[in-house]
Image (cartoon, rainbow, N blue to C red; front, side, top):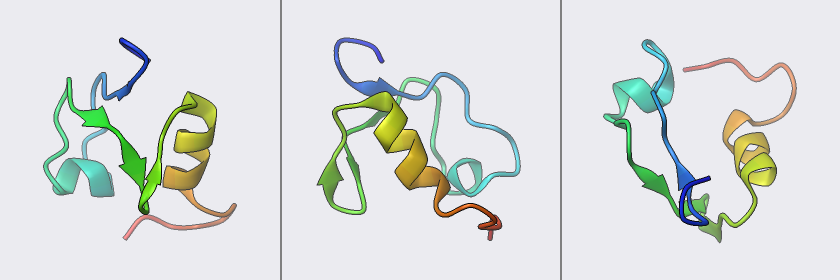
Length: 55
């Protein structure tokens, strides 16, 4: 969290976010249309259900 916003520090090479062009410093303000206010909840929603594979 930086300035109360979920902020990308460094996208992991090979992940869907990396392939989508997410860059260090990008702010994540919504996940699936839901506003992100809490880092833990945002990360949980981005990761998906347990066992979900990257595509």
